[in-house]
Image (cartoon, rainbow, N blue to C red):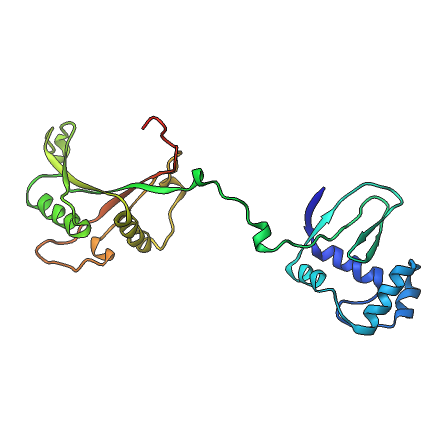
Length: 242
């Protein structure tokens, strides 16, 4: 089985096994006398002692802190790895050449690519009148589209809201314009959202306190409004019935 292991303990074993720290010269005779090894190991030690060269692949894997190894269970056998003899009773470490980025590239499934279905911007004023009209101007200035007014579903006497009274305004944006406005909103939030901002289906929403943070010039005649962002995500084939 091919697994990825931590390079630190293997490096310690490697240097003690060959008695030759990586990248440093040491006499081949002294290294060989530390532990009885096969002839191929002695040749390898002598070659490394003469050149002080470290196998580039091995050194890169050590520096990266990871190794690709094959673990097997063949008691009494030795493993071979790029010319290095690895002696062990239960495990054999077999360093595997790391594939290039092209080889590691996994074929992507186009059916799993996410896209923004729509972006809904909402400003709830809580009352009809001039404030609601100014809020509609803010959305129109931001999106270039005509907003839609939302009505109250029922009467709330505590807040002086009557049923069917226009109390909010919203607009739906799609395509590149939605991506642009969403990018501006996420920049205001410093690209950080809480877990509870996301639904189980992957949609998410958040709010901003002041619309002027989106790059809109402040107009004293309009004032400052906060707004809610609601993003609906989709992917190919997600809603087959449509």
